[in-house]
Image (cartoon, rainbow, N blue to C red; front, top):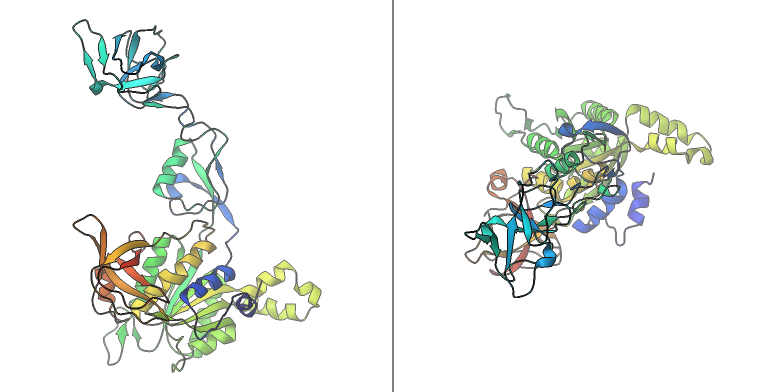
Length: 452
């Protein structure tokens, strides 16, 4: 397991006091590793979990050629360019759920329902609404209306037996759950849930139920972060609010490291703050303190925190020879839980989580799917932007009269304006080298739907 210093050495131009947002994500992707433990769960419990093995289709879907329409099935070889086709319906209707056993000769057709197995020798279906029926009961199909094979679903068209239906690392969505069910599978193998501990720090933080006092604020970060983690599908370990007392902070960090794969804190990571959080982070683990070229946000701590047992294992390991220290179990024991120390301002906490923590946690969950692409929208107004930092402005995306997407800011972009996150439906992402934006310019947008 590499130290933070070794990871930093792999990044070109790494400067903890002036990190680009892109460099932060590159660092975090090297720092974290997926969990390895797996479990078997029923598909009703699989939503939001990450596949630990490929799902190989045990059957072909569909299992036979079938009709995509209610209509009439016939041999498409009878279709001729520029010529209408007249066919005589025969026999009973071919229904979904059972094979039709009759025979169809040239010049004949059979009425068929959606999903019904295509009768032998027939390969084309004309929708009922596209036919006319003559006085003699025969159906008429206009010239050049169809091509041979139209409105037929082929065996294995969706999935062929023996092929991979879903790949290891897929985040299971409602559509993926339905796909698994369509294969007749009742359970899947997934990675265990990621365990994430969270606590707020600071003597100025009030828990709900406490009376107001001068200079203090009610803790909102605890609830927004827990909500974001719950949306992500991890197991949340809520450690509440921890005061700026060394013993209490040490106990919270030790407990979090013993119980969780990752630890998230808010507050106490800015240089010069009159609290003990920074010192305790350094004392208990391998931690770097960053100043990120971004707004809102900027201060962030990242690293690993060890539990008491891990710290003892690491200490014992250092007493051994260099060769024995390289073994895998010693590296794991010395590693500890991944730490994300976020700033204290409410909006900065949420933006830092969305921009950096969420992608890192998804990797820890074993998810291989890339982050959703940023959308492009027209800025409905001029936006001030200082080049040399990435800005995440709260925005409201809507549809313009011509059907294109447009976005405008929610107004005041102060990092304590939590109400603006409620009004927004996305973040306007103004990149590091970007300057002022004029009305009508295209900008990138990170949408909130399904995330916040």
